[in-house]
Image (cartoon, rainbow, N blue to C red; front, side):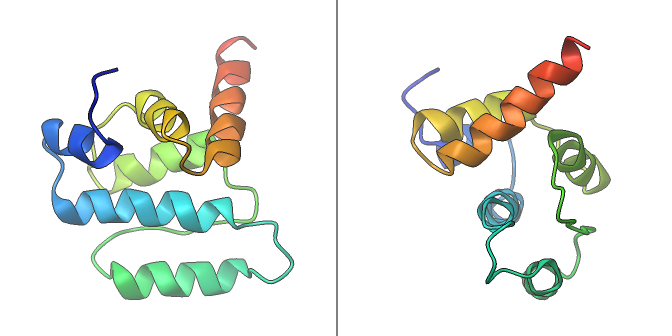
Length: 110
């Protein structure tokens, strides 16, 4: 991995600033799911307010596959595994990235 920040890497992969902000919002908001003070409905309302042009519906059981579907539905083409590994290596939502990456790895080997 080059010495780019995750945002710089995404720009190198020709994502728009809006797409980058969308991905960062999805990742950070979904990392808070499971907290007793965070409600999925509130997360969805906030994301839909911030990104009314995007298609997204977050559920309590947010998965790697669901993240892939959100990116696909919004025509965002980027390697999710590499994206999560880059966030993880920079210490951003580290536990959440590990969970999603482990799940994806488990799926691949099932």
